[in-house]
Image (cartoon, rainbow, N blue to C red; front, side, top):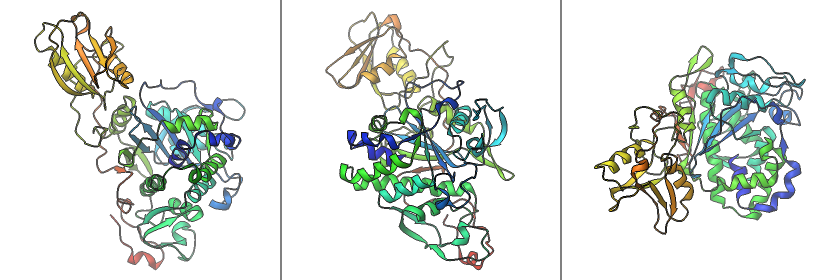
Length: 482
């Protein structure tokens, strides 16, 4: 997905002739019972499919007639400022409720509680899989509306890594054939040596699929390496630079192999979407894993941590409780006590505001400033307006109209006024001096130690748990990179 975004961002209409190669899935399978959309931010579901249809069995083994499955999934939340993003990985073995999903005959399946997350992609038992059902399940799980869904299969992944010229990754230990296929009787040949190396095509696919030979052999550990690989992928594209000549093969590979929802099903739609993401840099791209714990051989969701994570994203708040800017701080708790009926969930992160008191009420600017801070706004100054105002006025400088409208959600009846001065200034009037209150914003989910930035060191945090003792003698000399 990151490659697609970066590829299409710089080349515009050159790729319109690729529309015929973009595959879409049937939108009729998307549930009618969906969460509402959000004013700020956007959510993109990325599914890694291990379906063997259309020649994928040549890369992944198995029969072309196998039922399509999902092996990897993450929900990418792009913040409203279009400069920050967080990708939340959902372990495939997580126990969830799969809601009703559409079958081939047009009927809908019954809800399936306490079912493995990756089973949603297999509802209907088709070779191609069921992306709409996975989308429905994610919306049910998170309470977030999924704006777009992208499916990457074996061929798509191999083509994209080849088109970019390979990705530099860190392999935590020597990897042998038996690590990729634990059913082998012998260790087999060396596939990857320990250390930093460049992978593309089939080798890149083999590396991100390996689970049994590294760490405790779990899918959780594999998620860590997949997050590191995607981070390296983004870094590679950015370091190569964005030029039409260099990105044309990459765009062609994406168009020929990805499957997307109808909302991204044409090249011009892909370009338009990509243009909204081009300003997100490596340091502001985070990867986290859904709060989890083992429940036997399965994965259970840890509450209330997971609900706090989803609640933060629903109001476009940083998942780790930090400011979305490069300088981090713990945002102050909301100071409003009781919600007003119909009060909006407003997030002001990334928006700086000055507050001036245009009424005779002493200390009003300070009280309003505290409430704005509770909504995540950065208050850069408070004071007296010098003259009385009959209505609250929100003045905004060039390019700040959208941010001013966000501020105005908290001051019903306030007047918006463009100005030549930079920034945003709120001048309080007696007709609407107190901002609309809401329930305190959710406490941040405890993602400390569970966060990877796209610019982190490539060899850091690549596994989970201690290595299992393999049947072959190779296990004796392996060490846990953590």
